[in-house]
Image 1 (cartoon, rainbow, N blue to C red):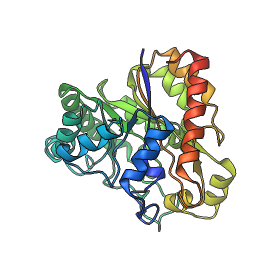
Image 2: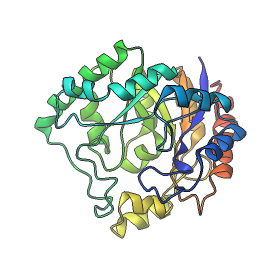
Image 3: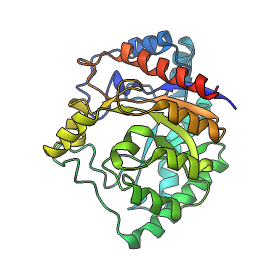
Image 4: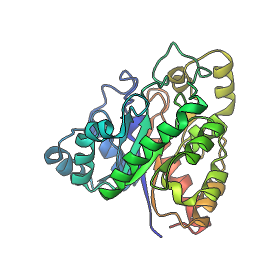
Length: 296
């Protein structure tokens, strides 16, 4: 069993809100990530997308490219069209030696729309799950055949947010469709992430660790705030600074012999929550709890 710890650059520079960290140079972000002690990083909006530039850049900081978010549209196009559309992203990941393909359905997602409240998540009709699942499985089969793990990212503001969504998604997809299990999105979506780990161990392809501030989230949701307002309002934070018991998470992962990346991804306003010390807290928390759980 092999565990590696990485981070998303979203705490330094937010792709959905470019004004957050928009003036932070990529070199400074990568230096922080290296100095904190991470082994890898996920793609961010500031990253070059050609391997000839990206590989020597990351090599210079001793970092591997873990993977990166891909926005899918399987509710509005078939698997063949999606496979054609994802080729540039796939080529980059393969050339960089990335082990995981993170996919999220965004054709009707609302998390990037500040006019839609946290309560306005789109619902998929019962009659639509079978076709969606068939298409997703076909894409995942293809990605698996290319040598990467397929890791679907459930996410607030998307069609896989709630426990019922997760259950329907699992029922209608095949075993090639793994998850990017995101503790923060699961907790706020009402998904029992520990139960998902225990009940569907073969589906846990990738892990994102973000924590949450319950009081901030509750107030924001009740006020009609959007997802992005929630980010600005501090509903997310790093492991060790919120309400999630990461000892339990690490014990659950150890219980299924999880092997792969564990990534800290906690979007905050970097002007309020300085990314480097928060990343240090998050990594220290995860390493401590992983060691206690025998996950290493």
